[in-house]
Image 1 (spheres, rainbow, N blue to C red):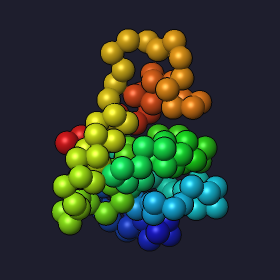
Image 2 (cartoon, rainbow, N blue to C red):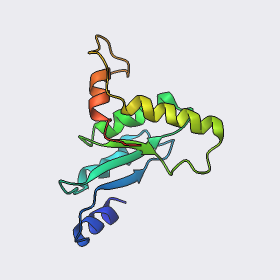
Image 3 (cartoon, rainbow, N blue to C red):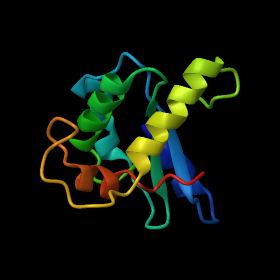
Image 4 (tube, rainbow, N blue to C red):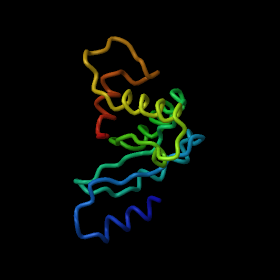
Length: 130
């Protein structure tokens, strides 16, 4: 996917506002995220990683932490949309997206994401818009 994205960004003459890359639910290993370091984003292009999976709070947090080791800035999204998602998973997916894209209201004094403070989580992952 990185090669394809780089070719698109190289070949398309107009602005590319964002690129979405799916992240399977079971991919929490460094090997999966390592190729992201070779992604050549333009200054106007945002990266959205589809690493949110409904009913998977811990896994979503782990995927965000792993991706953060390789990519400095990215937005979060679902892996492949939510059109065919069951109601319970849909609602959970919305809750996850809301949580991981919200800016904190007060400065935290503790870590809520096992290593990422609420402030850093909000600042880093607030680029998704609904």
